[in-house]
Image (cartoon, rainbow over all chains, first blue to last red; front, side, top):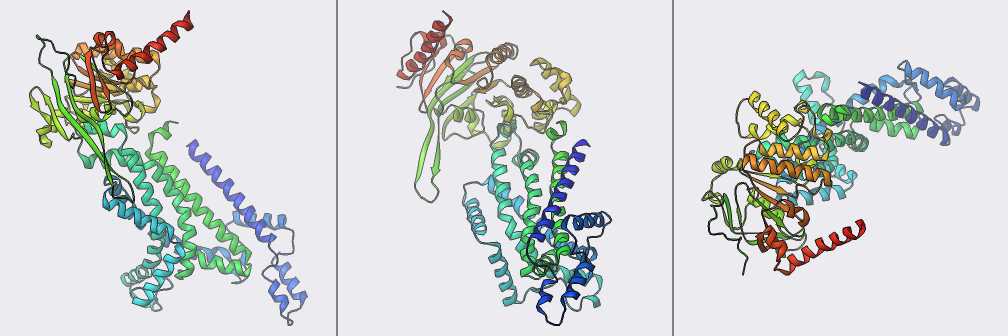
Amino acid sequence: MKYFARRLFHASLLLLAVSIFSFAILQLTPGDFFAPMGLNPQISSRTIAGLRSQYGLDRPLPVRYRHWLQDVLKGDLGRSFAYNSPVTPLLAVRARNTLLLTGTAMLLAWLIATPLGIWSAVHRGKWGDRAAGVMTSGLLAVPDLVVFLVLLLVAVRTGWFPTGGMVSPAFSDLNVWNKLKDVAEHLFLPALGLAIATLPTMLRHVRSAMIEVLEAPFIQAARAHGIPEPRVLFRYALPAAANPLISLFGFSVGTMLSASLLVEVILSWPGIGPLLVDAILAKDVYVVIGAVMLSSIFLVAGNLFADVLLFATDPRIRVE
Amino acid sequence: MKPSPPSDANRIEPFLRVASLSKHYVQQRTFSRTEFTVNAFQDVDLELFSGKTLALVGESGAGKSSLARCIALLERPDSGKIEMEGENLLALNRKALFRIRRRIQMIFQEPVSALNPRLTACEIIAEPLAIQREGTQLQQRERALQLMEQVGLDATWERKLPFEFSGGQRQRLAIARALTLKPNVLILDEALSNLDAPNQALILELLAELQTSHSLAYLHISHDLRLVSQFADEVAVMYEGRIVEHKETHHLFASPEHSYTKELLATVHSVDSILLERSA
């Protein structure tokens, strides 16, 4: 229990630091949301000053940060200038979409990486393992952007998959089953892209973790007792190789999130990504900070989950 | 001329006989088609007797561990025979091999990695019984606890995990696990080299006790000739994959023949003389 309390405390400290940082950095950049209005001769500088004071942009940074923090603790992430609406509900929908996308991609990536990595480790040095090695190095070398663009190209050329948005225009007329199908069709391409972007790292880690364990004397000892090979793999080697993989899982949440920003923008998935890009360009500060905080929370939560999983599966950590 | 085991007219039959055993590995460089073979060991003859210890010495890379793994039936040699009580083990099918495995057990150099980090002491020792599907869980646990006592571990530690034990205790755990299936042959692959001197002495003592009480045949692999002189009945010297000299221990120390053996003995003597000078 103490372990979790400590982890939670660390996590909240981290989030606090992230919020201060993003707040400060956004203020250090020149201009604000209302600055471009000054270029319009029909809007007087008094109007703009009025708007600034209405949104509290004229107050000093620490004061604004304090106000923001107080609001956040009440569950209010501030107001978007561009949408002229509260940030919280705006982000909530986007976060749900991003979670759906990254969750699916994560599941897909691990479902491919784990069996393939184990298979590669068992058949290391054989042609199949080498082919997998060439494939993963190739994917690692190709920038994610290119992967996503190629997927987009394929989708547009073949017309097999819808290339934008999350639902079809006629979504509201569909029944539940067809709604699910519709979302799944839209989800497939971005999820595949995201899975391809994160798969090589996972695959290589699974493979090397398994190889290391398979050569361990305790596996040899079990073999000397006559243990059947499948049981060696799944009852002995996989649990022992799990630790680095669980940590990698927490880490992969971060990789996934940053890759998802890109995939969302390119394949127009209505997640946090496009919202964040627009908000940054428009200097819609509270949306930016809200999105950054949300991503950090996902990241922290992913790592926390990995820690809890480690704690649950590894007796060594429990005893310590 | 390859050295044959020291012969004695009225010797009893060996429990395990290894004849002309050879093994090589094929390596291939990445991005190249050239393969080259590495001979792990060649044309090895050995005999193990119940209640006796054969030491196998040689520098690292001489093929000792490969040989050990082949005799423990963890790897398949290329050619040769491994006979146990007249039966060639290399000709057996998998099912028969499964039955035979219990009779040859191995103890590894690194007790840390030799024990499954996720299992408790009791589970580790009972593991071979579970694998061989022998007895109920209750019986398996009872046997494990009994073995813990036998190797000098407190049975109340049954729920401890490997990392909670010291190096010497871990090696005792490994020994207990190897004994679970009541083997006839124990292969010790540098089993003492990771222990400090007092622990080495204690484990040696334990091994000697167990050898008498279980009439075990030991194949003790080591690079430490001085240690070997304390416990081995016979010594086989391995050099570049071949056994170059095989004699009873006191004969080997008294009259080494092969140049490599002489070299090995010379280093032992020079270390001894340095120690003597220091103490004087």
